[in-house]
Length: 536
Ligand code: F6P
Image (cartoon, rainbow, N blue to C red; front, side, top):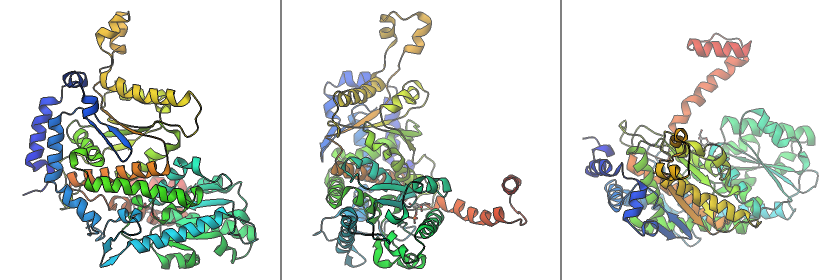
């Protein structure tokens, strides 16, 4: 018998329930229930989560949480926190929660407590960050380091960039922090063009230390450094590595004493709070980094202990399932009303889509339902003046996550009031729209009426926090990490491998020599023609 979720009795019940409520408008749901706006909220860990503007009733939630139970979510959460090898396709544990465990915690993996290792690396990172920040780490010519360039890609880039941008307010402005990820040489050239080699330090961040983009950029960086400083010995003072692979780091020529370790039980897209966060810690300082970890930990505790019906990541994950599999939504928008979170949607794209963009379940069966939607977004209010038209009046249903803060980091009245008013107004407009009668009442000419009507009934969540602190950032990231876990559990896929990225990498390796030399081509006619065009 197939273990696909669509065969489960609760799924069938949800299908029936969906038929009953799919046409119900949020206007009528709110009319029926006076305190809906309070009832469907959770306030915990300093996050006010309003999910009242979703096309759900109490029964929907009952069925969805029942589905989570039926899919063994509770046991799966416990198994992750207990260090079991739940990443079965790679035979690995999934222990990013250990990266933020408190010093006295005991998290066992293969018979040993990993927490002392985690804190050992954190202390080493803090030592490095402090030396850079207090200018005692000197470059080859004796000058202090002023520029940090993180070289990495995917999880070894997106988290660090996002966190650096998010926490820029807290960063040491005497340091210049840059990121190079793309194998496109323009990325490297632009990042380095105004930096002096003697004041620049590279953090080469790569879990495997074999990734084509990162190793190519790292070799170019070494050549760039040596072209200016002219002495191989300079590498030791200007390169550090973050990796799980000591051998590869040594092979590259980086002194392994300047290597910051993490472990194969940390997935790339779940690694920004590991040593991969070295650039973040250097920018904002160890205390703020520890506060970030504390925020992660608070959300971990909430996820582990709150009942499903009061559990923020559980409800979030189940709502994504509800819209994806019942309403047929294909995308979900992430809309932070906080400019410092401008890279948050890009970061979440890898977290969500590399995790759950899979059509094969853990049992090896092909699914007969959709898995991860496309996640995308931009900060408000910019998005309002570009793509929100489609969210309001387009033909796709796009559930939105609004993320807002009560206080601005740079308090310039009246900016924060205007920003927040816009966020709240968007949710209101999406949910309730504007009826034909209301438009008519405004004296609009008959032919324009259909254009000015907003059907509404478009769902959104609001995540409201006090202000963007390192701690609150940690909570938000962990919240999404765990909601991805919930989705994966329901869909029955493994959120922790990424086999789908391999084929393109292998084929590129075949094509590289074919671009460089005139060798016979054995691809399809399109691929052959493209290679010939490049060569010509
Ligand atoms: O190609 C995908 C991927 O493996 C991601 O999962 C990972 O975050 C990224 O490449 C970078 O990998 P690494 O840190 O090993 O260089």
